[in-house]
Amino acid sequence: MNRTTLSLIAGTVALAAITGFASLSEPDASGTDTAEAAAVLPVERSGLLCPAPSASDLAETTYTSFTPVTKGAGSDGSAQLQAAPRESTDTAATEDDQKTSEDGKTTDTPDADGSDTDKADTDKADTDKADDDKKTAAKPVLAPKAPGTPVTGETSGADGPALVGTAEGGFAPGWTVQQTTQVTAGNGRGLLGVTCTAPDTEFWFPGVSTAADRTDYVHLTNPDDSAAVADIELYGKDGAVATTVGEGLTIPAHSTEPILLSTLTGEKQDDLTVHVNVRSGRVGAAVQALDDKLGGDWLAASTDPAGTLVVPGIPKDATAVRLVVFAPGDTDADLKVQLAAPTGLITPAGQETLHVKGGMTTAVDLGDVTRGEAGSLVLTPTDGSAPVVAAVRVVRGKGDKQESAFIPATAQVGARASVAGNGAKDTTLSLTAPTGTAKVKVTASAGTGGGAAASQTYTIKQGTTQDVRLPVPAGLKGTYALTVENLTAGTPVYASRTLTATDGGIPGFTVQTLPNDRGTVAVPEADEDLRVLQK
Image (cartoon, rainbow, N blue to C red; front, side, top):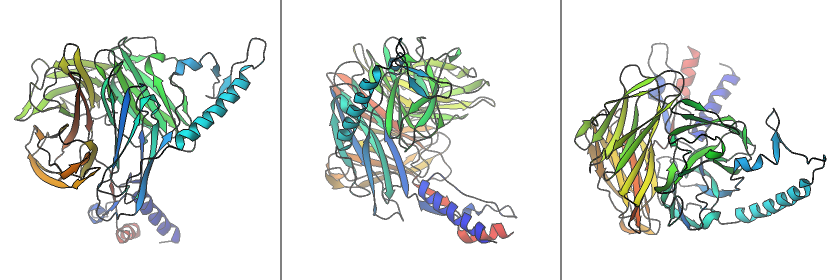
């Protein structure tokens, strides 16, 4: 073996440990999978992006950062969140002042006499913006103190910025940040929550709307040193929706861009799917859906398209549940719709199957499908179905005291997942195991203001959903984090957390799913790599 091969192996191992996105395995000549000899190492660097929380002057936002204790990760390192400048809030507003060339570059539109009278104003605006950005960046950043202990920060009003965060060393494995906003009145009032996400290059959001009573924004945040370019595609009940300025959107380095979906098309549809495809660079993406009558919340991206999907933790007191499904590509999907209830899998009356045409969005009302019990939706292919993405919109309350939230289909917990920002009395954790009985360990961390961690193990029977009684930290002060560990290898477990906050009789709530935290990565032992390459 030459020196170049050895260097390549060493570089690959180091990259896997740093990024957390690599998992290496190589079968040997006899067919034995050498992944059995792989070392599971903590990731050494993580990145998270939080969207700008609200445009309301009445907004009160809390951020909670948490890193679970990970064996082998140590306690050194750091994590911090910094403000990202907010760019234009209305894509259509720039159309009169700019023109876009075929290569995607933007230039000023000259006046009728050929002069450029806007240049001085633009230069001044750029200077003012730079000064504003410096002031924003000078605000204190949210910086955790130690793994295992959450830390919190707050902001108020409409000036809360998007946040760009990086964690290194012992703070990186499983790092999570929760953003929760309470808006007491106005469009989108209620409790809005979102788990800050890692940057990526593709996102699916079934459940958005351009209807008259909805104001939906897709927030794109760029964490990198160079500009990102993204396309936003809309798909409705009849297929692709024509958009005016959805292609080649530029998100400047270290900035965020909230884009009002109704400015991309003149069509008014209740149920749409947004596809964000990043041509160059990476972004974080989330949709803020604001309703005139039903409040507002964040819609996180659905898990990657798949034949089988799980939407965990529909609140037991839901008064209306609307399922939205999209099938990417040209192939139709036929799905069996089931509810994992506390007693097992059941089929909602009249909704046994769902046919989704390729390239089209399909929505179906399931009513009060949970009927006072914990429940999760399980979508499975009836016969060789195409992959789909999905989400549900949930309504609680009645009459003029209703509130809505969204739950996307999510990836399984895997080995471990965490969620921060939980209160002693306002949190419900839902666990479901659709295909087999599983044992699950739940650990409540110390509080942001003090307290001792506590753990409890639960058995989740096959095909059921359980709203478990949470362990609460002794002497709890402030909020705490929950870490869920699946102790039954090979049996998928899915989870979500519901936060509630009633204000003026309106049952405010928000739901976050708990996909695997990707805090560790499997890296083959160096001697196994050498043995494989020598054969």
